Amino acid sequence: MVTSAQALKKYGDPTLEHNMVVWDIPANLEVGAIPKKLYCNKDIIAPLTQAFTNLISRNKASELKTFDGCFNIRNKRGLSSMSLHSWGIAIDVNAAWNQLNMTPTLSPEFVKCFTDAGFEWGGTWQRKDGMHFQLAKI
Image (cartoon, rainbow, N blue to C red; front, top):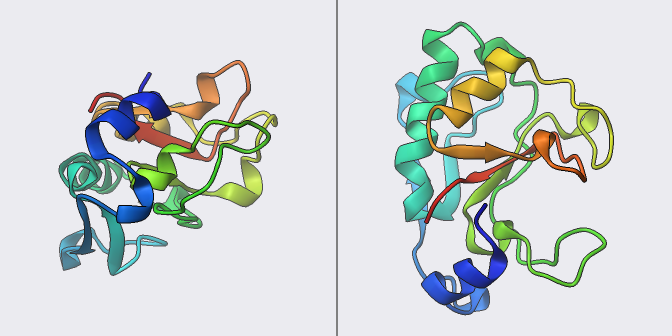
């Protein structure tokens, strides 16, 4: 699991927004709630491209109801460490149905579209965060 300490070491102070870019998401990946542009860390683009491609090719794109964010400088909810959203290497989806500490509702096939692309899913953590996907390695 990537920690905020590892992200800080690799990317530095998140307020300086190192490695952040505006990604114009290709038209062939624009499905459902996927935005047309995303302000994110350049290191998340290839894995997200693969995850979105997986959603489409595996007919799971219809399960993506809402795209609920990527870059947001903040602490983890209820904790003192920084969220990986602070460096733009995490995303949230379908937040209304997958709140922190609730039983996640995403299908295993949907989750696999992301984990096969290099993401870790918060729905498997002790403190379940079913909306959250973050890079598994940096």
